[in-house]
Image 1: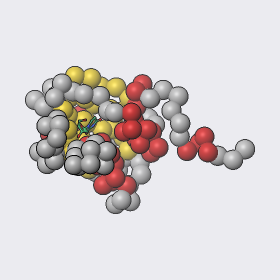
Image 2: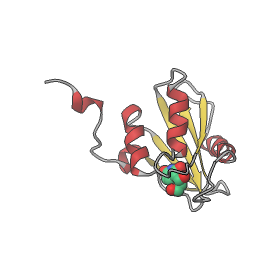
Image 3: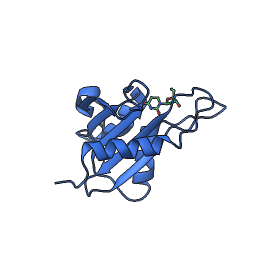
Image 4: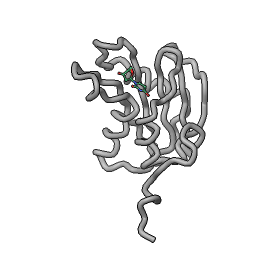
Length: 134
Ligand code: THU
């Protein structure tokens, strides 16, 4: 049982979105990732004048968590205008560590628009098991 509920995770994602660096798109995204042990890591999108180096909020949160030794995740809340769905790169990135992740999508008012799973967003994903020798 986790002490953090979906509402609290959305609030954390909204907090994370405040730090978004978005001079090019002006599309603010925040994420909050809940670990299996109950810790929360937030993230925001960080854009770049070179455009392609831009990192999404979801991957920011994951990299923060993984770089601090976390590898087991329960859920992620993502907030953006219109409750946008995670991009393909982020789906692949999340699949590596958490194919069973719960995904909560909310708008910038904190209204949850969709609660789903990574398995639904990325069916038949390519992951570590595919590289097993056999
Ligand atoms: N973005 C995210 O942060 N997460 C997504 O899953 C979709 C896109 C960001 C990247 C860029 O800074 C802006 O939204 C517009 O694409």
